[in-house]
Amino acid sequence: MLNKKYFQKVRGDLLNYAGVHREVIKICGDAQHLAKKAIFAMQRDGGKDADKLLEQARALLAGLQKKHAKDSRVFDEGAYKAAMEEFAEAALFSEYLRGEEMGEIKNLNVSSESFVGGLCDVPGELLRYAIKSATEKDFKKVKKCFDAADAVLRELMDMDLTGYNRQKFDQAKQAWYKLEQVAYEVSMKG
View 1 (cartoon, rainbow, N blue to C red):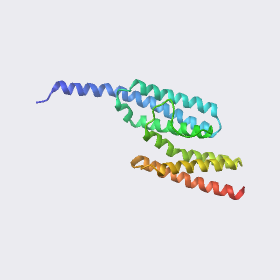
View 2: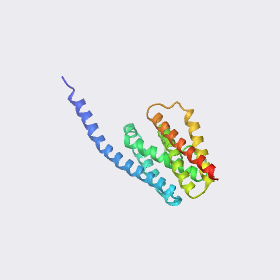
View 3: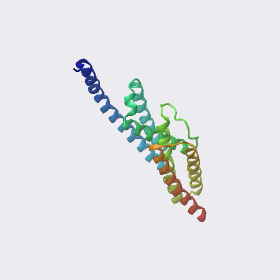
View 4: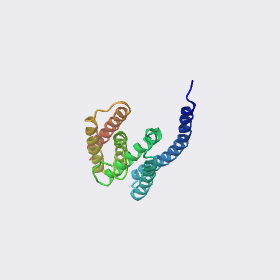
């Protein structure tokens, strides 16, 4: 009635993947934590620390990609997607702070979905950086943050975002609105 050999094969595959699943969750959690710490360091002008943290996160994710290149299930894991998105956000914000063009993330395979998810979070980081800059009375930085967030929103508007990334886009717009208010208030003082 049942093909016992096939059921045994499926059971074995699932049991083997359970170990991979735990490994993915651990590595991705570590990478996501490092990327978050890198962003925190960037917000406090800790560029060298941020670069080290970002490189550690990249190395963890690149190692995972290499080790499990033939098992696509790894790249569908929520922990993996969250870590990649956080890394993309940190890498893009780092490019902005270094005065570079925000664009393709080098030395790591980042899906379009993870890239867009990370990009949608950049206006929130720009808002925080602008507020810090405004308290330091560096009004030129506030204007630069607003201009960068505006450019990001314009690009995102041209994408046909649905589902999760549509929600992320809505969050990006909210950050942009708040940043617009900060830029306006600064312009009234400067």
